[in-house]
Image 1 (cartoon, helix red, strand yellow):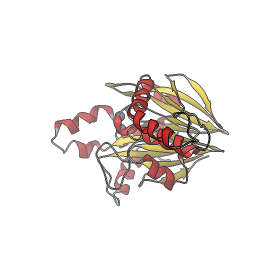
Image 2 (cartoon, helix red, strand yellow; image 1 turned 60 degrees about the horizontal axis):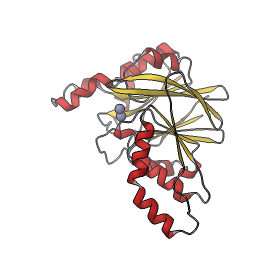
Image 3 (cartoon, protein in one colour; image 1 turned 180 degrees about the horizontal axis):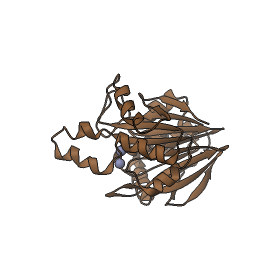
Image 4 (cartoon, protein in one colour; image 1 turned 90 degrees about the vertical axis):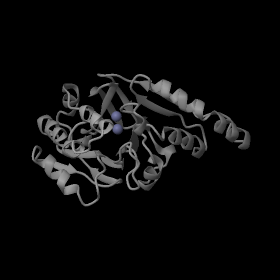
Length: 274
Ligand SMILES: [Zn+2]
Ligand SMILES: [Zn+2]
């Protein structure tokens, strides 16, 4: 299975890092997890166009993980020569968000249907709201869902994708919790969004330090990976933004707690596991 970090940024705009988004490819399947700012630019750079996606997974409904969902829906629709339904899996209230996105797109949808004779139906989107313990199949992959702890944002979920005995956990945002750790047990890779507590604490802005209570630190992600027996830890969603060249400083913080492979880098960093 191949993991590609499409966007390693955060809500704060960054000229070099797109918003939170990860691509997982296995067999003939390509699954997009979260749809942050600029997702389709990075997806294209990874060689995948929207019509090729097997499904979209949403870990939670924070704006930095869904800002460009509208772009994914629209471009899949416009770029597909035939109807190409898209299934979006996400936590409760995903249907509400997707309904809102489609409402926002209503003028655009009407313009394009009026303009193109061969475009006669609006985008076909199916939403499946998932919760802890759910399992489903996407193409060549089986997917298991577990609750995460990103409170007061709730419910939030992580996904474990499996293909031919290889497994990848997409942890999303949140602090360590038992259900996430169980999901990670023995996984080949664990992708976690992380925060540098030592840096965030030096910024005397309440709205920034508020985020300390609902994000994993680099050290916590490494500790979860170690306890769960994960082979490869993939860090993303770097808070604050990771200046290129400082990767080894972040890696060292994780390596103090986890002896496996640690992946950290710019957008489009890719790793194959299994
Ligand atoms: Zn979040
Ligand atoms: Zn986030």
